[in-house]
Amino acid sequence: MPRNNELFERACHTIPGGVNSPVRAFRSVGGTPRFIKRAQGPYMWDANDTRYIDYVGSWGPAILGHAHPKVVKAVQEAAVDGLSFGAPTEAEIRIAEAIVERMPSIEKVRLVSSGTEATMTAIRLARGFTGRPKIVKFEGCYHGHADSLLVKAGSGLLTFGNPTSSGVPAEFIQHTIVLDFNNLHAVEQAFKEAGHDIACVIVEPIAGNMNLVKPVPGFLEGLRALCTQYGALLIFDEVMTGFRVGPQGVQGLTGIRPDITTLAKVIGGGMPVGAFGGRADIMEHLAPLGGVYQAGTLSGNPVAMAAGLATLELLSEPGFYDRLAAQTRKLTEGLTERAHAAGLPFCADSVGGMFGIYFSDTVPTSLAEVSQGNIERFKKFFHAMLIHGVYLAPSAFEAGFVSAAHDDAIIQETLDIAEQAFAKV
Ligand SMILES: *Cc1c(COP(=O)(O)O)cnc(C)c1O
Image (cartoon, rainbow, N blue to C red):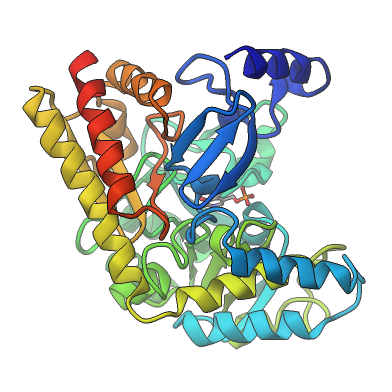
């Protein structure tokens, strides 16, 4: 990997750790990160011109495959007309209309530039709307890197957590209550003790940042009921799941309506975009109508809007998600079969174009259970796949992503490589 090694060494001189987002550094699997030169459809090529079948898809956005010609064309056409104006454009209305039309719980939506911005502002809005300080989040759910969300659970119930990042004063997270994902009883207790101080519950309704972990039956329904009972807002962080698990996110799959939804990743089609939206009466608390401040120099950027709109249009083709889910299942079922044939404890799960693989006997339901999987075996498997041209997420705590460009031949090639890899781990 001479060129990758050379680039990584050079990057480390001017960029902390050589990367602009930590998971890219391969620290949890070891080895040198691949520097990508270009990507097309299901493939990426690194600096050595090695080709990989990509199951990261830019962590979700590349749902159509990389550099879909219609998305690239939309971006090129928008760019010719100007890159940014700092004034409103019609494209922003069109994407807002597309989101409101598709997402059941969103009546009004504001566009920002990242998922972090969307969740940070959604929480400010929930606090502004309810006039309450506390928020509830779940261990293993990631909601971007705003200070009050970088917190890990303490030991007992309602013990306030410790910051998971240095640079976050304890005072900044004193209003953040961290509970176990899928433990509704803990949420009931928290509301009993502090219910009238809780502004919101924020949750990844299908978690994708501790590997893939689905909610157990009744968990999301219970959150909805408790929030309604106590006058708190329910925030679905659908930054990853929005337009990824189905045409209407998890709220479409479950019928549960959050008060606020956050989006990013797929809605930008590969460009930096985030959004948060929900009930009109809540959204109207935002500036310039209301007292909750939020702004962004590049919010609703015209080039990003063009990429997002072109993507959303292509996702609306009939049968898109059925095909995507079927391809994803072919992958997970094929992997499971081959792992078991090699005598390994292994299981997998998927929803829409998102999947999890676990070196354990049962599908996990919490961060603690994910942590009990065989992480060392995952590392070996990751490298055995990478060396033969399959690029998986470089961590046992990340979900994987399949795109519309992953056809039967690509899945079969992946499974053939996996068969060899399983034999070696
Ligand atoms: C990726 C992600 C974020 C953060 O989005 P960025 O665009 O990386 O800031 C927030 N929430 C969830 C669920 C995510 O998957």
